[in-house]
Image 1 (cartoon, one colour):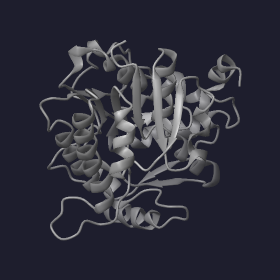
Image 2 (cartoon, rainbow, N blue to C red):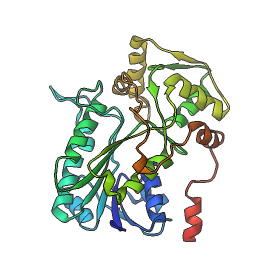
Image 3 (tube, one colour):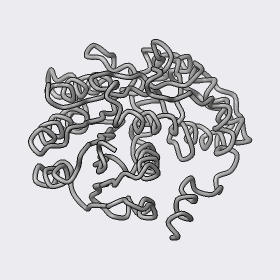
Image 4 (cartoon, helix red, strand yellow):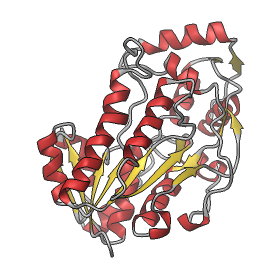
Length: 322
């Protein structure tokens, strides 16, 4: 094992939890920083996981964390930001999470000897992309690859599905309460990838020198229109509703209203801008990642059918005797 201790930034979330579980299963020690311990409690059941209360946006905290690691995985990302100021290509929240943090992480890796860095980007990231989100992701990739001394691999997943996702589950919940679903960007195309496949790609790449310096697209075996994914979510959850595609002006009005939804934005105008480009891969998943993409139709019915099924991590709780 070339990198026995791995620091996972953004590890408490939907994708990070799966990556950490696979790292632990392979015998890695994993450091998981969080500003609030409660957010990481679900990982405490896993052996070899060290939950560190820290602020990764603080240089001193970040230095302390990176000093302890052989490799760093950065999964930090946000879907929404305040508007861009002046001629800035993206808003300040995107800048902080997607651009400034990778710059600081790479610098810390070089300074303190962590020689491996895996970076989460997004399918469609480009400096001339139609959304702030995708432009900031492209700038984050550039930051990740800015040093010639660090072994870096970049991943660009399509929308990620799996138990606990915020994508299909959201559309399933909406159809539980509404008789029909008006939908902006209904004909945008996606190639959803299973969260377990994303986790496997990261873990398989960690000690694989063949992946160094490369950028990988992560996508599933099939392309769907957004309206079709919404229909499938309702169907698998047992309450399918008609989906009504909205013209652009109404779609933007809907997105504006959803930006101010209670509890935080459900969707934004910038999200709608992201959908102006199809979110599909340029080819099949690269063979050196060792991943056979899993079909959505195999996984999604299992977790959308009921909301109270057992946790994905029950098996690890049993193994850890906790």
